[in-house]
Image 1 (tube, rainbow, N blue to C red):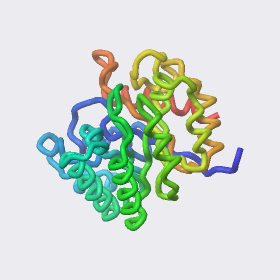
Image 2 (cartoon, rainbow, N blue to C red):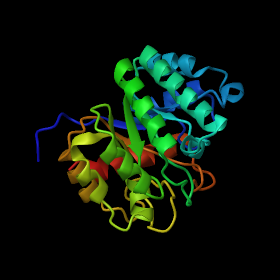
Image 3 (spheres, helix red, strand yellow):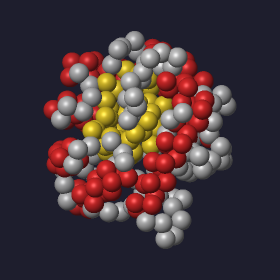
Length: 266
């Protein structure tokens, strides 16, 4: 195992509760987290009351580090079709890269496809991926492609586009539920690991449980990450689907924080 710096612990800014951003940020910090995974989109502007840029300022003002930001993925499949909608998706991502560069957020997390039936790989889609990566290279923002239900598109992209600015976002929960060979992917791309999404499940559904609540092999996950080139936080990705009634937001955050400390810090 290589020598690595002391890991910080982070969590997704949307951790499962509909609360004002200012309150979420304070709770995240109170629970002990040092970094966050940001959400880079204004879809919830009316609810949040802040633009994504204003959210960035608020998060940092409270002392939290933004290591990466997740781009929206609801129309990602359009990227693979030779349509105006597909071109619009590309233009949106190019603008997102500009925004992250302006805010000095170093890594963009992106899904390659969405759904169980991913669109077929296409020349136009790969051309758009190349253009996006070239733009990211110019703007100094890394793109971390996340493993989802099928890894075919992901591995094809990573194997076909040789760029120091394109790498993997490893989601261990997705890997454990949907991959036939869990834990192989981060080993394959250990020198291109740019981000991690860490959460637990029982191997049946993508539950986004706290580390230790499911059946993910956390010693394996930790050792694989620590043997890679990745130097960032152990970043957790919580969800609202499995939160028991009556659990407070702080209790929820503390459960995840303590789970991370127990499972990932030997």
